[in-house]
Length: 133
Image 1: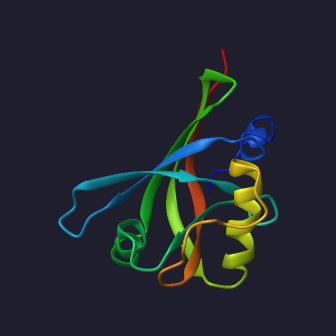
Image 2: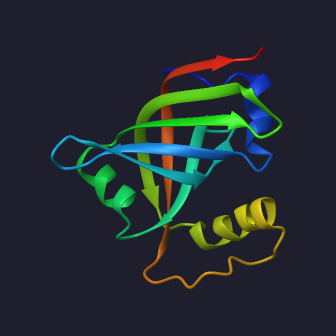
Image 3: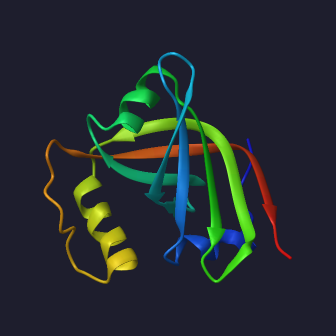
């Protein structure tokens, strides 16, 4: 089990976009840009999505994922995480997407229609790499 270094946790307080890579049923990779969050208590990355989206479907079959992100203030500072989706929950998912909306859009509520239900993917880091020039 790996951990997010303390000096990279600020990436989860900024408008840092991440790319989440999952595995399709045939084993081919699928990548999606996502808003990303971090739960320091559980040391897990959090990605909020909707049921039925490709990434949500993919992690049900194979929970192995990779997440990469670059600092929006310094694109040469990056964090890359390989791990596994340890939990998928609806608990607090609606409130969580509103919190992310405040950070990423400056609005109080998620403005897009929710077609199914929001879920949170909790990713347990197994391998972490980073660079800071």
